[in-house]
Length: 444
Image (cartoon, rainbow, N blue to C red; front, side):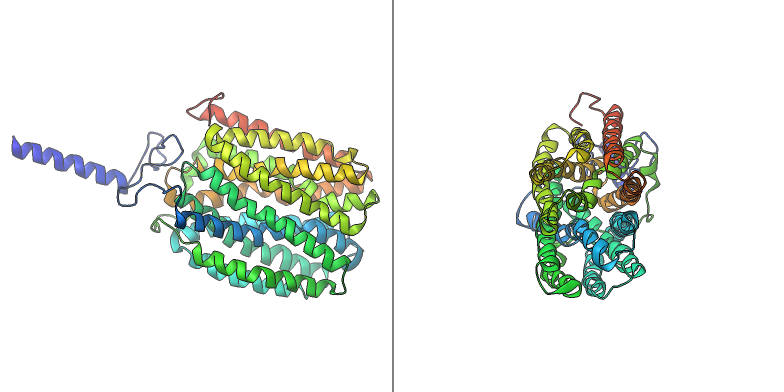
């Protein structure tokens, strides 16, 4: 009996070890089963995510620094677009100029398709190499003069490098947070809001109220981000060991929840970036002074800080999909009102509201993707795949908006298009709740 019991115990232990090495679930995706929070049971050797502590919050601070330098700079494109239209590229149409920003914004998410899996495999080396090259590309941007120069450097090169920094930052923070993940990711993305305050104000002042000129304006921004990225590169280290399985994970593409969350983010991205790209240009057509028009983006990004942190905290308590639904629908309603703005005061109030609600989409969208990942060691890959597919909306949205402005000579059709796509994204996120254990009325 003793021998049999020992043998039985060894078999049970062997089965448990096998499950850890080759996890599976009833869906046949080859992934470990999900807990309520969307992650799998971790090996005792790895331990659960600490959800706090000095090291975890340093990683979150590093992630915020990354987004300050990358997405914060991208969020200031409206200021650059207004300047390009009157100085660097006066003979180009609004949609031509918008392609620079939209391609940059798309690539910084799409390159996560490579950056996320690379981080899962090689760790912080990916962030450090990309950070050095990103600062170098900023200096190269200061020398650009022709349209193809801006497309090559600001759109393609910088967008690619931003993707190799930002998505690993998302993944690293997800290693350290589980129950507080939405709040932590909200703090990380809030770094882009702070960057979106500082950088547009600095750029608007240097371009329009100083003798620096375009070249030195961009170089000053490059010198500003250099020490910030140095700190981020030092603290963004993974908690979990690297994985050596396939580069991309096909199981994600067989998960209805993952596909629906990505679809929701796609449609929301088409409309949510419309105000970010065109608010300064629209303000100038309403008689607002150019420097003040640039400040509108700073106001928008300042309020999006609260829109990313506060809903992130609430999402951990009331559901990450719920936060995404409310963010999409709220943003859509506000974008519908874009063409009604006539005064400077009205534009300032509008920037406050659209900043708060659109900020929810970015933080809640990334948190919603994370609940689809059954193993935190694959978080970079899931984030990279999800944001790469979802950000296709950012690629096509602003140029379509610019084409509508050029075709109709106004902003009404432009605002109707952006608002409708945001609300449709919210409805897709709502439908996704049918595929969660909590159901349509639950805190998913």
